[in-house]
Amino acid sequence: MEWGKPKSEEWLCTFFLSFFESLCLVDPVKVVVMALLFALLFKKPTDVPNEKVNLERLKSAAMTYNAGMTRDSQEMSKLGKRKPPSSKKMQKMRQRRLRELQAYRLFFELLLYLLYAFFLYSITYIVRDDRTYTLKKHIESHLVDGTNTLFGFSNANIIT
Image 1 (tube, helix red, strand yellow):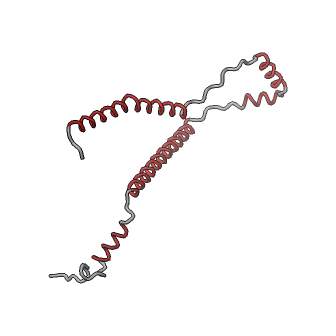
Image 2: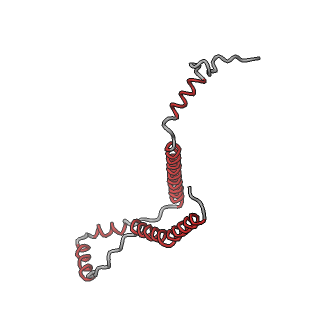
Image 3: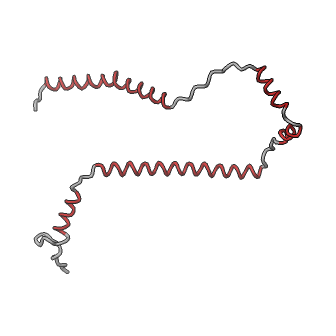
């Protein structure tokens, strides 16, 4: 390894250059790209521009449609309007809606816990060495099983 003032100055210059390059160039570009990506993914659909509607034609079509209705059907359409539900029924509907919301929250929380457990499981088993099972079996065979009499504990006596 090489040490000394020129090497450390070179390293320091490289460090600051890369730090300021990242700070002034790379990170702002990342932010802009991510902002554009999120804006494209989560944008609201654009409204259809207001088309000009011919109101006279619409009125005449409505008149011809209503002219075909009989008096009974017109009265039935007036009777079809509903009254608001009673307070007792409203209370039951509120309780039902609150239970639904609570169930959705619990389901979402359960989903988050399962996702957390999956990530935790994945992270802990990614770094696992494939040879650990073999090592464990080897140590167990020498110490616990007593197949090797030199190091086995099977011949040990309890001193009282």
